[in-house]
View 1 (cartoon, rainbow, N blue to C red):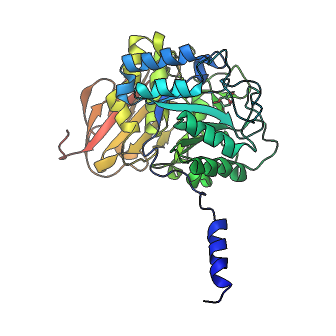
View 2 (tube, helix red, strand yellow):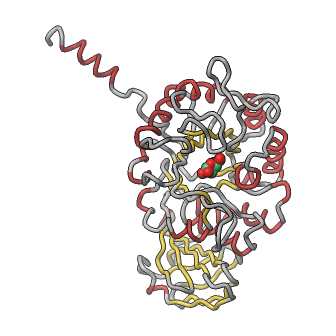
Length: 397
Ligand code: GLA
């Protein structure tokens, strides 16, 4: 080897992106938790977050899998400190973020926080641009386990360049942190971000409107967001999920049936299940919905396949998700504003595997015959049937 060749190799090795990777092994199934934004927006403080964590533990939601407690926008002071560090708003979070993280960890939760790839968050607090390494170290020192990273005040930046900066900074800081990208699907992150984020938003913000006009111009109804997921299924898998946004389940703009449809379809989509309701005040039926083990098992199925639409007309849609062991989950959605009887033959569905399946109805908690006879069901407006299909002859657990 010539004298110059060896140092050159070392130089290339050092310059090559030693930290240019995300943390592997995280989010092997879609992350589950609770996020403050959908109900509380900027009205957050440490008592509220602690109270919510207590309620999530006591209600059985934690045991059902909801583990990340994510504090969204508005936790910060308006300015960084003299050393350029992010600081929590001392009125809202007087004990500081590390203490809050300790509280959550002591209860067995994981600690999530929000910031932004731009100069300011969407609510105008300091963003992470050009502070990536400093901020990542701070998050690691606070015990953060999940970072939701937004896209306001990015002034024409390229998400493909900007997001890897924070990914690398997190990796260099050394604490495994789930990296949740939130650039609203603008750069089609599903086509490039599998090595950057563990999940990425596919659309603008959700709101608690089923199908009508949202209240804000940047918001979208549940139905609109559902429609935009068509075709994205091939890009999701363990460690890299499409995120059709947080749950509006239990929020006042949705009927119970709409909440049930939203939850069922997000399970079919292998979507992150981030509850966004006031867990302290949820009704028993919303509690039962959010903690349903059979529905959650569909979302969290280890095969990690995102479901896809296999039938759509003006009256109803059918969505299907392959599960481990040749099983399937199927969701039939009544689009009508009235109750409707929906019927179809199973072999008319796109991508329906051959063979007969036995069926279990997730919401009715009863066996529902086989796929040898047509599906026929009366469904309330915007309600769903959610079914788990097992190949005939295969023993069920
Ligand atoms: C953006 C995100 C939301 C929320 C707000 C906070 O709109 O998409 O999910 O984080 O910012 O300001």
